Image (cartoon, rainbow, N blue to C red):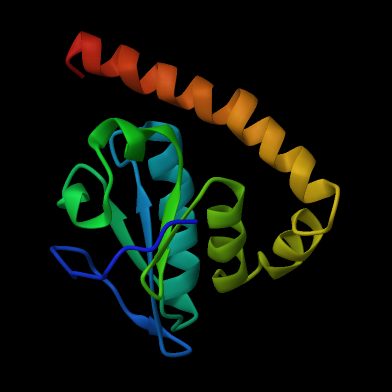
Length: 139
């Protein structure tokens, strides 16, 4: 995993156990937006500390990302480390009330690898293809 310096540009962030933790997601994706909205509501309702940043509203270069890279999968910036894919979901779920159990199960050896193959091989490419189609239509 690569490390990137935190620059705090236009990203809402908060501190968790002395580590900045921000989820970078695609706000123009209806599926992604609904899911992130649900996580955000749970975090806010519990008084939790987790930031959310729409990739369409931040300087992605500050994180070493291009718009295309950022639209391909979920990212979490935690303590200066940029984490993507299933590992990003595991961080998100650990910090979202009601999802700790899911994080523990998906994080188990074997299950984590299968989840990674499914996310990287099926889910992320399908969501990215839908994103590209929306961009082509100008929506």
